[in-house]
Length: 428
Image (cartoon, rainbow, N blue to C red; front, top):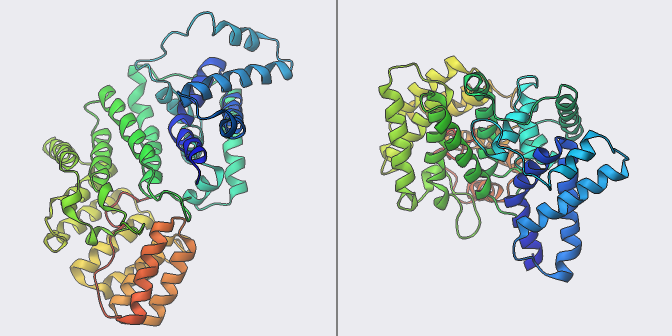
C-alpha cells in the first residue's frame, strides 16, 4: 500500500464519524450526510495523489463534504427551508444540543432511537458512526448484503419520515434509551477487537474503533454513573483492550488467550477494569449481561498463567448469563469453559447441539475443531478447521486456525481449547 493510500485509509477510519456527524448536525439529513462524506473521500482518492496529503486531512474532508452537500441540495433544486438553513450554518454556529455537546454521541442516539428495531439501530450506527461497509455489517449479522442494505435504507427513511431529532435525550429520558446505545457500542468495539473485513494485507485489529467505543462509553458513564450496565460494558472493554498488544504475533497471526504473553498486557487498563467490576459486585444488585461478561474477563486477567484460571467461577458466571440470555453464542462460550472444567467430551456434546443455529458462525466451527482435536477425532477436526477458515473474515484469525489445523498433520494429540472467543468480548 502506498503512503497516499495508507493516509486515505487512516483518514477514513479516524474522520468518517466526525464528518458524517458534523454534516448531520448542519443539514439534518442522514442521506445527505452519508453521501456527501462518501463524495469527499472519493475526491480525496482523486486529488491527494496529485496534490499531496493535506496538513489537516480531517478539516479538508469536512470542508469538501460540506461543499458537496450544498452542491447536492442545489442540484436537486431544494431551495426551501433546508437550503436556507444550510446557508445559515456559515453565519452562526449551531447551539449545543442535549446534555453533552458531542456530535458523534448525538449521532449515536439518533441511530439508536427506539422507533427503530434493535438490529437496525446497531447496523445504522456501524455504517454512519463506525464507517463500516454494508458487506462488513452483513457479515457481523450473518445476513445477506442486499438484506442489510435494505435494512439501513429503511432505517434512514424512517428517521426522516418520523422527524427523529438529532440530539442526546434529556437527562430524564436517558435510562430508557441507554440499553440500545450500549448494544451498539459493544458491537462497534467487537468490530475493532477482531475486524470482520480484515482480509490479506488489512489490519486484523481496528484500534480506532475500540478506542472510539471506549471513549463514547466513558461519556455515557459520566451521564449515568450509577448505571451498572454502563460500568460493566466499560469494564469489559477495558479488560479486553488491555490484551491488545498480545493479540497478534509478529508474523500477523491471531494469538489465542491461552497463548498470549501476559507480561504484555496493559496493567493500568486491567486495574481500572477490575475496580469497576469490584464496584458493581459491591453494589448488591443482580448483575446484567455486560457486568457478567466483565466479571468473566476479570477472572481471566486475574490469572498469572492460564493454568491458574478459576474455570469453576467462569462456568458459574456463564450459568448466570444463560439465565439472562439464552442465545446460542452464549451457550457456545459457556461450553468452552466447560471443556476446561469437565472435559472436551462433555463440552463437545453441548456444542454439537448448537449446530443448527450456528452453522454459519465461524467460532462455532473453530471451537468444534479444537474439541474434536482434544478427543482424538482428527479427520473431523480437520474438516471443522477448514470450515472455520472458510467462514473467517479476518486474515490473522485464519492464520491461527490454519496453523492449528496443520499441526494435526504433524503431531495431533490433545491440547487446550483455543480461547480467542471464550473470553466474551466477541460474544455477539
